[in-house]
Image 1 (spheres, rainbow, N blue to C red):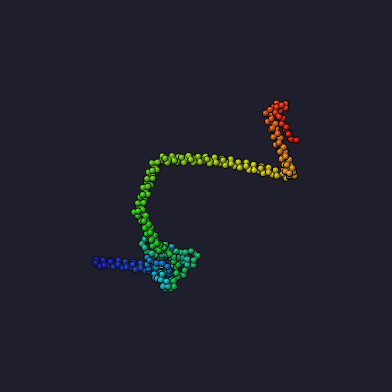
Image 2 (image 1 turned 45 degrees about the vertical axis):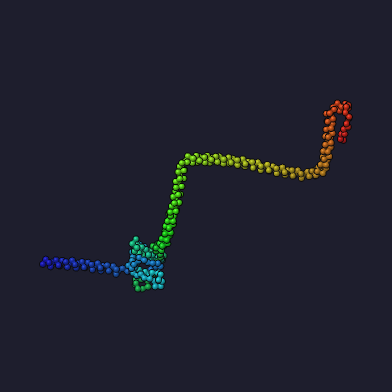
Length: 313
């Protein structure tokens, strides 16, 4: 009797567990059946390495669907056509301005599709719930991961060239040159340290020279003021000379007839008067010589022969 009771209890528990599992499956399927999905195509121009069927589809970082199909585009083999299934919800809508990009999740290398909502001005894309019908296409753009992967070979090549250049700089010959430069720098610093007092004296001399240069500049400024005064004086003298020349010109213009008469007649008379004066001076010189040689004979008529003196009329 006790054995039959145990079997009955085990059977009841087993039936209860199976019923719970069946109810959970039905509840899950009911949720799936009640959820409506829209299907879209995304055409990627580059590789979609890391993206698998059943991969996540995110809208602004929120998981809203899955990848259902990945295949090469029949019209252009360089492109990849990805079909996604997205939940039809009231809190977002896929618009013509929306864009899809391939991104990586953490450091695991698992790729997922990230959809950016776009502006509110874009018209909503048609909602196609039949996966076999013609599906609208969501525009795609290159992701930063794809750009990084494409640029990686160039970056790696440049890094290798940089390493080669560094190795060239650190060659044995260059190391000897660098060592020589460091030794020279150490010797130079030692020389500076040994002649610190001389350097200080030189700096003091330079300071004194700078002070004297400042005083000289002040003197030059003062001399420039004196020079300015001299220039003003010269300018005033030039103005006075100009006025004098103008007065002389006006005087000559007013006495033009008298000056002309003087040049024609007065100069000739002046020349005759100069000749007469020369003769008079010669005669007076001879009289003076005779008086000096014999004063008494000159005064009283005795002694030397009387010389006749012809005075000018």
